[in-house]
Length: 223
Ligand SMILES: O=c1ccn([C@@H]2O[C@H](COP(=O)(O)O)[C@@H](O)[C@H]2O)c(=O)[nH]1
Image 1 (cartoon, rainbow, N blue to C red):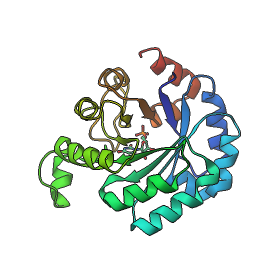
Image 2 (image 1 turned 135 degrees about the horizontal axis):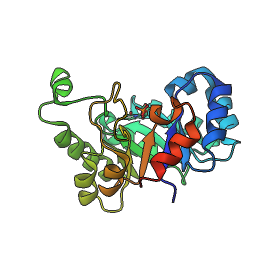
Image 3 (image 1 turned 135 degrees about the vertical axis):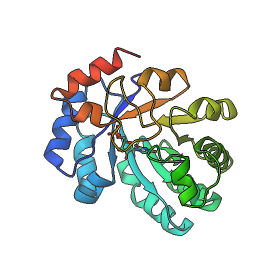
Image 4 (image 1 turned 180 degrees about the horizontal axis):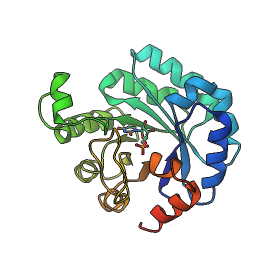
């Protein structure tokens, strides 16, 4: 299975389509997030989906259970392969999100954003290191019936040990020598996969490259 989902973070539909076409033969899918969705909406998602790759809709839904359930329901026609919600939304929200999403969609809970470290958690009132919070939220996601979680490559081994049949999405992935930008908990693609990631999410190291297709192939060759 092709394990790299390319994060296409742009508000520009034409650019998104051109990137999706460029990576079509080597990617496992494309990930569309808030930047793309706010600019282009469901119609934009459908246009990218028509290029033929599975769609990971990374909207990180986080609200009261009723609102998240209605949002997940509204997204049903898009039939995303993967949909994200924030695990910190709590058990009722997670259960309702899963129940409202299409049966085939993997609903995964974002645990601790890969852009955060222990200091950031402390500043929002969460004591302990990211690994502890990931463990807590992954357990909540499992008990709530989700399909898996989003966590960094540094935590995925422990998460998989506790949830062997879970689906583990790992962003914050950087090939050796690539700039980390705003990411704080970063591993290489090989490390993420060896630690148990089900899929890797990689954006700028591919999309900002002069030749995105070549950049993706080079990364894929390390796996
Ligand atoms: O914890 C998280 C959850 C989601 N993301 C998303 O993944 C990509 C990463 O892009 P890069 O350019 O490879 O840094 C981006 O779309 C984020 O929204 C994450 O990074 N961390």
